[in-house]
Length: 429
Figure 1: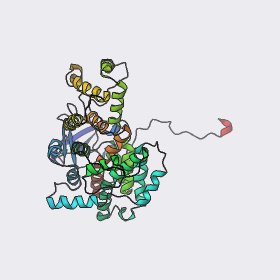
Figure 2: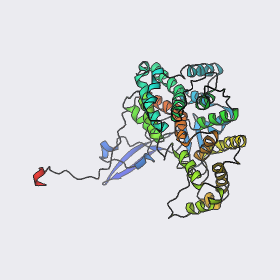
Figure 3: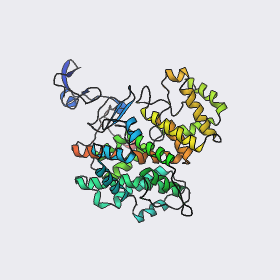
Figure 4: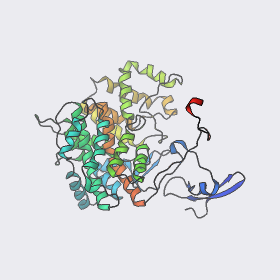
């Protein structure tokens, strides 16, 4: 609390003093928990864009500065020096691990990478052309039917086991969804590989040939996972917290987060970006689409540029651009018109006065879509890869919420329907 700060609110001629709270970073928060009891009014905030719905010590974003901190560590430092699994440990436990702790954590994760063999039957129940996200929502939700020994949210050990299982098994489930969609046999996890390398192996290896993970692609995938690991109280994270506030089991909560992430305004943004690049088709058509983007009446919006939270630049995009350049140099773009369009659009966005003045910089979705396409992933796999990456963030937020013993989420509303009215019998209507 701010000892000497209160917000004064006047309602119908009566004044109310609302206490204020000070975070470690960010703006002060007005505490309105008693406002309804004392003043008989609600606040109205569609999208909760000005509402702090929880306390959290995990991730901090400063949109004006273009700053993203995991447990206080800048994302740029972590991307340059850390790995996704180390970031998983950091998000889950609050501190960077010692070597002994990291070795133990890796062992615990790799021992949970396989899924129950009977879960294979779930995949065969889906159509081959099912979107992998539809498959993942169903299979992750079904994990609660297989792992009964980690459903008690009041048991710290069971919460820990559930966390390990989901971080370890989500790549396996996503890779199985991909393999099923293309008609190839499932590839079992290979625990001698890294977290990112193992996922690439499960996606692209086939039983008839040896598959060697390219270290450049492995590093790029690891960065994609790291940069998407958590992002404060976004839509899917808030969904996980809201589902968890009811006491739902952890697998159901993460399935709810995956379902929310599926939306094109959230996790589907990089897929939408690549589809836009393919719609443009060739470099010579870019001026036509640039003109549409500048025309307010066209209804066309460039996907992958600008960000709702970051006002000047996306710190994740700065790191992702490095990976994109490395991957494109490795794989080449000379014969790929989509990637040629992407590179030219990037050049224009970083130099055109219109884009600069509107702060329409290439964001993380722009670069991650380019990388995943160059790796050979279909656009339908972009959001599942996002889900793998965000799993540790969801679990960290869920665990934090559980230990706070908070109330069940229950937003209020501004009712605009009919007033009370009497029922009229059918013949008299």
